[in-house]
Length: 306
Length: 295
Image (cartoon, rainbow over all chains, first blue to last red):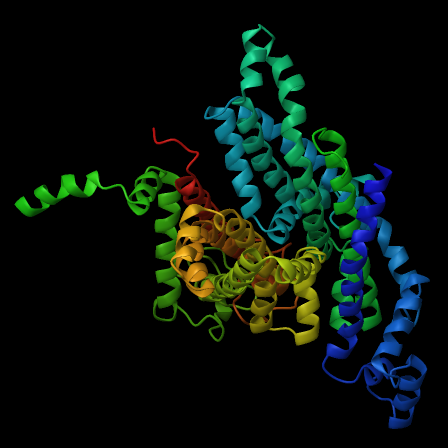
């Protein structure tokens, strides 16, 4: 097990390295001179030259990359061009609201998605199935920003039940996490259903029924674990979707998270912040996929950690 | 009349994969309706400039700002006095084009990469799959935002970004299918009579992967339309006053308190369009799935 984990961790290095190089090159792909961007629009040519020297932009590319990578490994992403504060501080302040939002969305969407999926599979082609699958296909078709605006209009503006913007109390989490999780819940429901339908037709399920077990025992003890194996993989993929989706949802609800920070940074061409955020989002995504793979191995006894 | 009567039994007697597919697809009423809806939508989008009651960008009805739907303005009027129906109709051109072009580009590049990776394996496979891993390491829309940050905003760059974002999915899908197909007897037979790699890949393997690619395209167009609209919504795609659905919603955000109907119609337009693509994709998938019995 440990060996498997270590091997997988080492397997991440090439991917992360390429991601790092791409993020580093990002500055040089931007139209315009990064030194001029950093110095500001009114800077004199002398200032721009000084800034260029200061940021090391006059050195050869490989040396610049080593400097960048060394900084990143020490948690130093440079300074924001807009606020002049270290990027790590900027991101640090925004990390927890986004983390909390993605986590609450993940939890409710997995619970509901799997619940709907199982109900639909068990009552296949009957009304609970039709209702569940209609909801699910609507969920994947409704864009998060439109759903967010609709929920805000109904529950915050018209009914005045919940706050509309900000992230101060748990009540602030309800609408954004509903919005963010809706598509994931829908995908999980569809996926769980099809996985469960396959399992319900297995011979061992028939055997379990034939020996007179209660249907609830058959579902919970014989089907659930086996049906969950592909569902767990799906969960990992969906987490990336949530991280990406949080960007849009944070804009709708004016959420003080990393997604809004990213959108503002792109607007302001604050490239050190963009670099830091893209790196962090990718790292988070890759790590979550690793965790999911390990979980997958834990619940699936046929995988021996080769 | 007699000719058709004579031809009919022959036609139904021959079971080509195509007629089989069509027979199964026709039975899925929801998917057929979705397909018809999409055909109508494409027609509306094509003829929109001649259909729209008012100019989508330069007509301003100052007497009925924020007006609710009426006989004169079926979808109402926005806070600037523009006719929402005209804007939604013109917007369908942008969203459908963004969806189709980006998916087509992503599917072509991704399929080519998947065929090469699956057929040659070895180094080609490793390099292509590593590239896909890297593209996959950026969650969803983030990759598109990064590309837009480099290329600058605007709809063309959004389409490029969304296309790149679709490549790895197609590459993986086609690679998997190619790996499964290449060891089958008919490929071996083709090779034994001296067919070149090119002929084998293009004539024999590629058609076998087509079905999966088509299904994925349909499901993918929906996702791409949402992604493109999302980018416009956060201000990185189409810019106001362009009547792009996502951009229209972004504009409507400021006036949600006073005129929520301005946001309603673009939302419905995106929802119905994407829903139709998803339902069609589901139907195509089920019709192509050999596991689903003909009953």
